[in-house]
Amino acid sequence: MEHSCLHLRALKKEFNTKGDITRAVDGVDLEVRQGEIVALLGPNGAGKTTTIDMILGFTDPTSGTLSVFGESPRDAVRAGRVSAVLQTGGLLRDLKVGETLELVASTYQNPPPIEEVATRAGLDGLEKRKVQQCSGGEQQRLRFALALLANPDLLILDEPTSGMDVGGRQTFWESMRAEAARGRTVVFATHYLQEAEDYAERIVMMADGRIVADGSTDQIRNLATDRRVSARFSPAELEAAAAAARAMPGTNSVEVQDNRLIVATVDSDAVARNILGPWNGSDLEVSAASLEDAFVNLTQEIQS
Image (cartoon, rainbow, N blue to C red; front, side):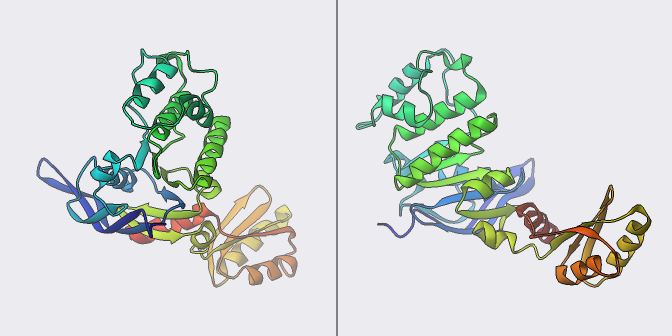
């Protein structure tokens, strides 16, 4: 088994727009091993899509190095080792789903059976439907099926569930897990925090063209140092408890929602003791920081 399938070092990409230089990717170091499911997580403009474009050989880095299975991106794609599911494009609207699969399969020497690929992509029963009559989610599943026809070692997905409903997303990710179980590496870009948390083994968080965190979901979540403590108060005691919470060392924010006090703090034990003691609170809840908390914390750090 090869040591890694993706190797990025000091990768940068700049665009010159009417004399203004925009650095979309700013010194990315990343290694992805075979068999991993990795999410590139970040808001629009974080550099995710530009990074994917370089991995697929659509554009060249301004500086730095990039190899895919030890080869250049274009050579790896040409050899059929890499396939992609992108957000838009790549489909002929007047063809039927089955005709599209047959057409693309004819360009490969040894594609897997079309019927098998259609089943794996959740396209059973859609083979005779024209592409233009397919929903956005069905078209994404068709793109996924086309990517599988190359029998790739690495699947690159850019916002793959864009346009899908909740059920469609669940079905799509069940298919992705099955492909990972076959030994494929899956790298997907998303701005859906829940999607990254539910389906990735590893999260690479990007902001402003840089990687701000890299690890498992639990490791990333732990980078947000706050814990949330909430409790219910009577109207007569709520404001006094909120004022006391704001005055405590380690408190980062205090919210009041209806008759509940919500405190984000680095010392949840001390807040909880006060809630159950002198503040006269009830219905105590203590929760760990969320992936969203970590994301907000990390992106604020890099922007400051």
